[in-house]
Length: 130
Image (cartoon, rainbow, N blue to C red; front, side, top):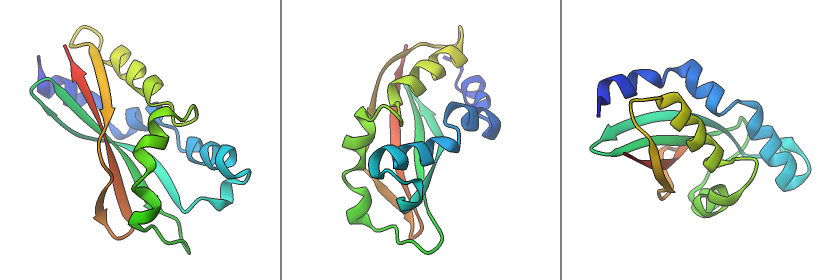
């Protein structure tokens, strides 16, 4: 597996295509009926490739005037893993297409919410490659 080639695929532009900014508002619209009710914006980031595991991140950025606290984000991996708007399965399918002949996505799981900064929490997406 060519880790450097795989890592180079995940540019900011590519990550924004895999998880468009509009998806955050769509998520909160589906959840609360109003996108303005959300306390954070979600973006997709690249973290690492180690062995046969590619790790991307769902980054939760606190919205101005809102409070991003651990008790708000700890249960999100379970919600995000099955929510049709977040669509982690679709993200992984798109990553599989992006990888082409370099690797195939075999399986995925979400890790526990990590607080990286007071105003940013991260949920890792671990993708097993073959």
